[in-house]
Length: 529
Image (tube, one colour):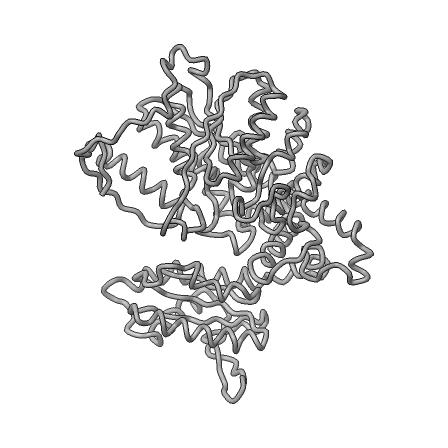
């Protein structure tokens, strides 16, 4: 129940359908809205009052620029400045540390470029129970709405994001950042839905776009350097853990995917003189990584880039056909856009592999003498760890088959009465797709007992366990079962995919439930509903 001033507008089918489609895509959650008439009006804030917009120097700007303070938004600001345009920056300030960094970057930018510039930072953060949600899946909706508010106040023509196309398209780079945890902020579908929704809200032609959609991260950094903005790189922040650990001298953890992306792009663009190594808590290439998330991110990032580099254009298009097809339909020329996305990802793979090769050469002595931390990204790549994730892709395929089939078979009137019946249904789905799994094999001895998985793929060393949450009380039982499995299977070095079928959403915190499982690099969990 959301109180609004214009109840008829917000309750219209067109508005609600757009909101639901947009938020469903951004978050992978399901939404419903009911708007009611606002009985007691809210006090008016003058934060966004700019006087008479017709007389204001920034009235009628082409686009409001979403300025996060990262490399991509900096490159976009520099491009806009070089085009001689006036600049309206809008920033979201979630924490004070990032706010300070953004302000410093804007200050340095003003000193370097003479274009008329106004920076509008907006302070919004999460408190209480809201802070438990770490994925920030719908943050882009808030962020773009802030930009739209400023654009409407200044009668600008729209909102502009700047983000490289590899991140925008968000192909499955790593299991740790897929699905609901993945960002879809500047995906072509998101931008198309933003454009449609905000055009409806403002009642005029309104565009939300991303000019960097076909650029790699390395090409974005090259843009900064070529436009004489290299000195500003040291003031940018790309880390996913902003605000959680930074001291006054270090702003990047060095272990998250954003830090890996940043450092590799800077080296690929030969811009390392502008990026201080001391800005990273842990060296991206040689620093230690904790088992679980940090380990998996490094391995899967290297794997993805290596595979892109080795694949032909046709193989890239085939492997990621669904992801690319979902993006190209939002372009006038689908074929040209598809070729552009394939070419961009090939360039990305080539640049990442080039940097990793040079880093291995640079640290060859340490690798040979085994003085490099064995959990570091370079040690993992040199040890071919990034080649061992074939089993994960196979596991993802199994989970995808079951996710597609179970909701069709297991309707509200035909839910399986117990776990054995659910196993039979899943077995039928998997056998129908020639998954080549063996049922309840092999037996494994652990302590004084024997155990066996629901399915196995011995060629990949993969076991599959199915759990069925029929009632709320099942959650505690299944938690205990999985805890025992983790010990038994982990002690034997087994790779395990846990499939948890939870059609009634009794498991409310997937992140907490998954934590003990994904700590092990040999285990995965997928929730099906």
